[in-house]
Length: 245
Image (cartoon, rainbow, N blue to C red; front, side, top):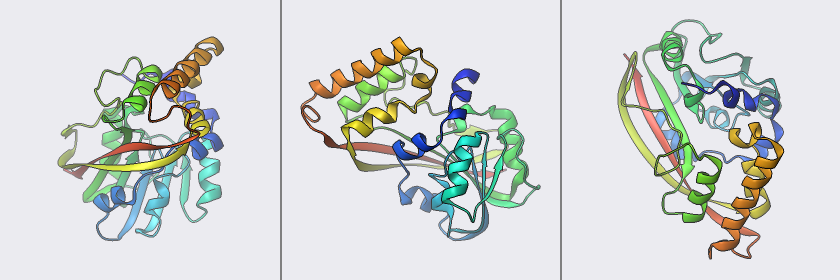
């Protein structure tokens, strides 16, 4: 079940999310659009971090996002994109009008049954659904430790909150690929990134201060990050591909 408080925590942020959150590797969109298509929809598009990869891959790119603050950033960055303030459960797009729907870092916030029904409605016959998540590289001990501080309720070994599955109502599972890549990041920006995470956004001041201090202790204690103002952050991007049934 979706935690509404966590889901709604992103409604007031936009510029910070765009500045501090990582983007997505180009290979992730290659898996969804090996060839150009007529129309592509980014659902739960945020500030357009995945949307921008769709531009040039589709004749018509649509973005749907419930947060006006995030949508304002997307519209500023990507003026050619048709942008709507709306939810995954009520997509303001005509039936069978898009070839690809991408959901990057957002599917776990959706009402799965309602969202899948809406995605199936707007996709063309045999259209593609792609679910994409960035998450901690299991080989990176210090980033995994930070994830456990930020997401104590998450028990997955890799620290993900993914809700992808081989079975989604109305869809046929096609493929799952993992892309490993590295981001060069400043320590200050790494810490600010956590301020854009839902558990930090809903925390009270004391809890938030404690979590930041614990993450700083992790950075100060690990030989890969101790005393450094910039370091390499390994990231794993999961891409799940489905076809409309």
